[in-house]
Image 1 (tube, one colour):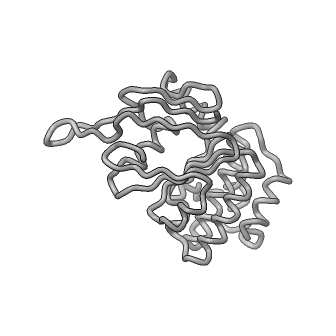
Image 2 (image 1 turned 90 degrees about the vertical axis):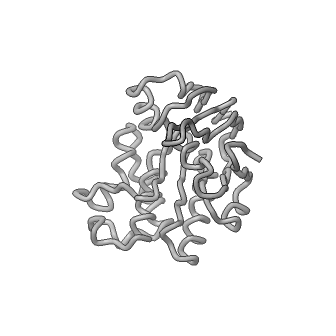
Length: 218
């Protein structure tokens, strides 16, 4: 299994004391699989994504990505794991404003030592970005920036992609097209995908679905 999670727990301390967010989460995901994670706002979906990506630390349990135990790594180790094995598509895009679209797309791949101009060209064509390459992020629409963020993540050929509402800033037609391309490219690249979404329609298009409620998966 590319992703394995066992008995994962996480809580936060608030004004009224300790608030449990995740309570004994367990799941596994193989290469080429796409998992949709649904649930109400505040159910812990983004928290789970952050724990898998090593952006936060779990209280208990175990996470393994491509054979490497995330929960045993220090800050530097988790940063290296994200650079080498995990791609994250944020809601906020997080594009580098001083870089062109072309350089933004290839930035993560260069950090990972997997810069492949031919693969980048394939992604640029698939996501309809060929006429935007010389532009800077501030010159793009929200939908275009989202497509650049998706291309940047896939360009590095990560073993695992974590996507937090990746079509949330797109109109319905563009969202459908981008999701089609994301699913196809994930399958072709042998990558696993965990997709957080509020949309039952988008979730139904993934190969697997889990619903998160009151800190537990169903």
